[in-house]
Length: 251
Image (cartoon, rainbow, N blue to C red; front, side, top):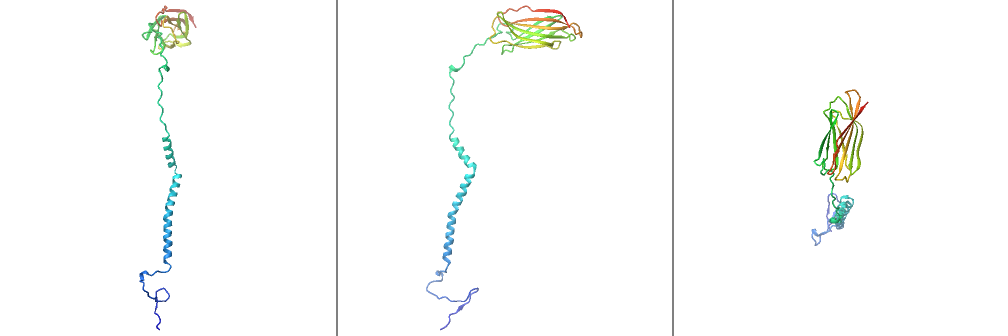
């Protein structure tokens, strides 16, 4: 018998030539190859199945940690719970206070036109008193100044008093005492607030100025002079005559 031929291949031990059978070379199975392919296929399938789970876990964790997502949901709920405001009830006519008729204490009086000017003699000069109203209230304003007086003789106001007289009742409005310079170009100004409910008839405003007039420039000697004035505020009131009272010199 002849020995089988030995085939030497690079890097392998010599082996005998395999026997040929009826199957083709392409259908021959190599031992140990099929189990490895099955393991790889199983690993790929497991990876494909676990990837969506990992991604969904990340997205759920991101959504739970993100404050903007939860705030958006809360905002939607709060907007949905807003209710429409109810229409405002219209007040009934009975709840509206009835308008009261306002009284005009200056009706048909000397201040009906809004202003008045009186001039009272003070020695060789004149004390000019201007009265006026603002048209929106019952206040009476006045300003007094010397007219024709020089600037060398000092003149002072030591008292200003105002009284409201109506039907024999006198109501004091002002009593300002001190030493107020009346030497030109200075003037004395005041505001008188008439009380509420002042009668529309028979009301007068009585004014008094107590003045100190210097006898000679720089002498420091003064004589006192009192000026009285009356303003008829409304119809039915009588205006008393102006009066000027002079007294002796004062130091």
